[in-house]
Image 1 (cartoon, one colour):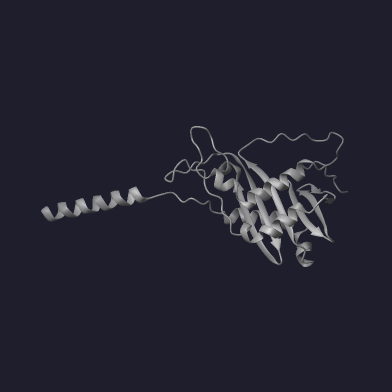
Image 2: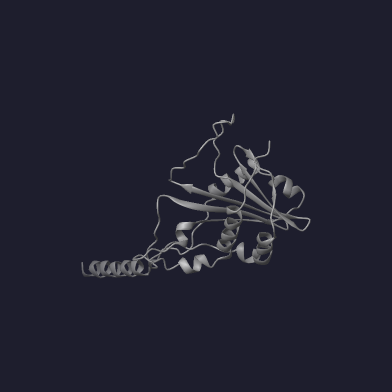
Length: 213
């Protein structure tokens, strides 16, 4: 009986110690199914197979929301019954010029020439860093992870010199709220992939895409 009691106490102490040392993982994990779905969309709607054949480096970018209601205003004069999904943007450099083209499930838009090569230059300069970066979770401390039901996600497929890397992140993990500060917010916002996202968003905001017929 005494021996049994000692063993029980030891097991209890070991379990307590293990619980005390347990921490949540800092870094988010990429979802394999989400990667497959994105690659399927790219092959279906965009020109990436053409770019791969021609050995043209490119950035494929998509921003989409989960768990929210989208209000879409249809053109009453249009005979197209298709309701567009979240668009995908292809950005590439050719003959020392940078281009961007928008695609969605309803069709493609004419490519636009950008006024500089800021995006492709940024990728060329930071590609080795970007392909190994990981976003950290929203954490108020090392033993908790904060998540929400609905958020906005960013997806990237970056192709450079026949090497392709996928990256994505939830913008919630970049934020920080008063009273529940995100200890990883500064780290996440300083990542090159986030800087690339901001650069692309800034470009898109000032562009007007025209649908090709």
